[in-house]
Length: 129
Image 1 (cartoon, rainbow, N blue to C red):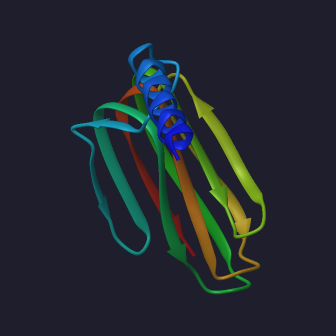
Image 2: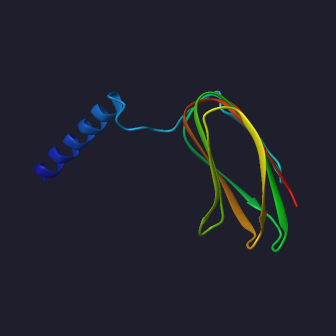
């Protein structure tokens, strides 16, 4: 019993030290603001370090155009377009960019994974069926 308590405190102390030395990254959002509708997602931030998930529902067997306008002032932003089983599209942004991609919707549910690596900026995403 005493050994379990000692092990617990040792693990807690190790985690605190790793966090202080920044060897473990936690999600950090400074002025992270987002708005979302059925076919749009817009977000901006002063500092974003971590991962965000946003889920979307579309009709099956449709051609979908995904348009993005990314603003990166510093750091790196990674966008991923996924269905439940696989990665469909992924792009790393170290500077501002615009573009689009077209997909065929085999399923109804998709997600956008937004990963920030100490980044500053914002992004606008728009879907067109």
